[in-house]
Length: 133
Ligand SMILES: [Zn+2]
Image 1 (spheres, helix red, strand yellow):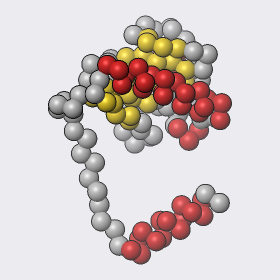
Image 2 (cartoon, helix red, strand yellow):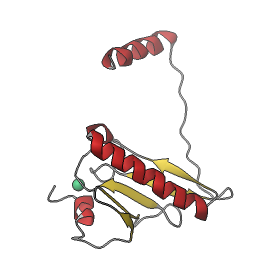
Image 3 (cartoon, helix red, strand yellow):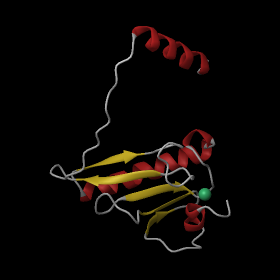
Image 4 (cartoon, helix red, strand yellow):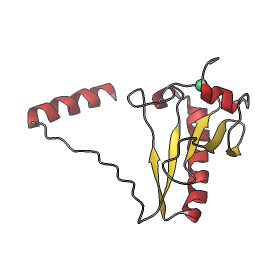
């Protein structure tokens, strides 16, 4: 996609701090890091959201994610994987964040839980199950 910043990074049309690349994926440091070594992993081919990935790119992206996560685990106490689709997705090119974590770091992901009625829960469960058939 012509105006996509991650496509431009994947094609090296604009510079980035690349830490790994292969035929299908590009891995580089986030310019607005949540922690030191905050990494973005993207497919080189443009897909807007995770669900749009074809099987080959899904496989290659997954393999790169795990490869990079193994490296990050050696430089941190742990790591957080983040991935947004449409809502809160800053760049409309599918990407995973790998955020190196320290046990004592100040990052806190407050994702509130909500209460729903049993009727609402059953209804959404049945809808999702039907969509997965
Ligand atoms: Zn793109």
